[in-house]
Image 1: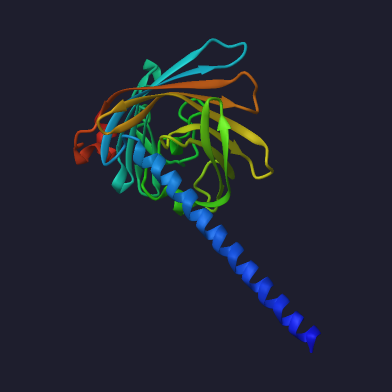
Image 2: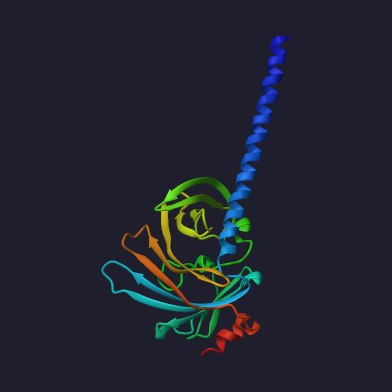
Amino acid sequence: MKRTFRFFITLIAASLFASASFALDSATSEKAFKLMESTDDTLAYHGDYSATISLLIQKPGKADESLKYKVFQRTDKDLMTIVQLYPEADKGTGYLRDGDNIWAYDPISRKFTHSSLKDALGDSDLNIDDIDQSDTHWRDNYTVEDYKESTLGKYQVHVVTLKAKTTKPSYAKSVYYIRKDVPLLLKEEDYSGSGRLMRTILCPKYTKVPAGYVPTQMVLRDELNKGENTQQVITDLTFDKLPNNIFTKAYLEGLN
């Protein structure tokens, strides 16, 4: 009888432990998602905005390459238009996003082709989905694999590991280092499905504007090709309501 009683006690304890572990995992996942969403809320990108993105591409043994793009986005509708401004030979090359549909525009042939959020801008390490500011992209595309607290340089940070659950993200897994005092991303590590580090993003400089914070300087480091990196600088930010026609194919066609 005592053995039977102990057996049932053991079963109940195991059941309670399993339930507690599940609850802890769910709570941790929710905490991590809210933290990632708070990094978006802290940024200035809400509703409509436009900005100029300047990229400096550095590769060993090659001359530095400069690219410049104009970005228009309506974050609450998943609408985005990107227009290349420099170099002159590629001026007018564009991208158009409407929800899950992505088109690339070639001003020479004046044709649109279906593209992907994983496509890079020019020969840089910046992908189209790095610019995506849609409100639900974290929960829609990821599961939380790990959460912990740590330090990065002089900052106390949250460390969130997200695993892709759809094919939209460019990488199978990403690790985010987020300041505790203000939820700003300091560092991102992107991994392949086999666990190999593919890319590191550093955000050394933020600028405070009335609408929030802007990562005015970023460094994207290619971990497969040592010495290759892309420096990104954001300028000319505006948060005025954008005309609806900016988010159309006709707008890109009319620029040339």
